Image 1 (cartoon, one colour):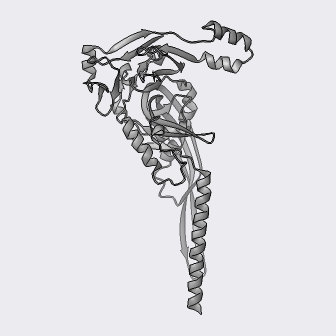
Image 2: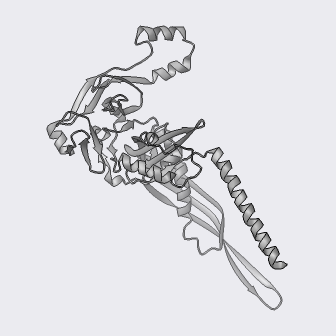
Image 3: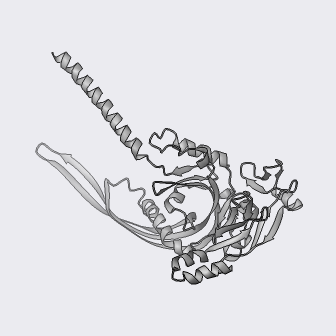
Length: 371
């Protein structure tokens, strides 16, 4: 497998894309290059590498023979791939969906362009506009004031693990043919000297039509939490750029694992409440609306595949995973934070004692006044 690293035309060190400056930068000689300058001067070096599978070496073949009944382990090995780092020569193992990664020994960013060839070639990429420092500051702000966080949760070593990832998404264009039925009530109330009267007029509400939706984003990676990726929206797709492998330099990136057909039901479930809500608008003339039924037929003939920027940090605490994510374009953050059970107990008793003391003082003062 061919691996590519983009090198600085000035000093030969690796380049990374800086979304804030919209340039490729070298952290060693502080050079900056635009896309046009890279095309003129050249910045790519190729290295022939290979894929790893069980049995590549004699020892691996022996292990496979002796433990042939361990199907789960063999299946996992079948998804592993390896390449040689063009900078230090180390062998780096990744899974079969990773298309841009780092060498853990020299931090050299490497892109595997074959992963984005053919049907896996994205139509566009939304570049990062925030950097790692901003992501670290956002994480610290999210943790700020959280007294029940475990000790050391915001230590520098953890902050360094925040990683920029280009997450695969499908953008759906969709039309929805709806047939909306409901019952509306209008109440008329009056009274005379003897009785109060209420008149209820019932109306059948029927609306039908077609709604068009454009660029509905759904993450296409089985590794990502769907609700977390949805919470990162919106992205500004007007800033999307035609896909260029160089944007991936300095970040992790993955190809999609879900086809559009795999996400169709999720897309319709996401749109349905909006269709019903929009169809039921302008019902304010009724005092109440009930017996709502909205039959909708969806059709999507266009889906675009693109990569969106996300800063992520996965932390593990007491056998549970906690995920922090930040929109790499807008800086919007979402996250899950752990609670230290020991601190929780201490705070509970502290608050209980304080409340008990305050209650005793108030009781004494009130009793003294009454006496």
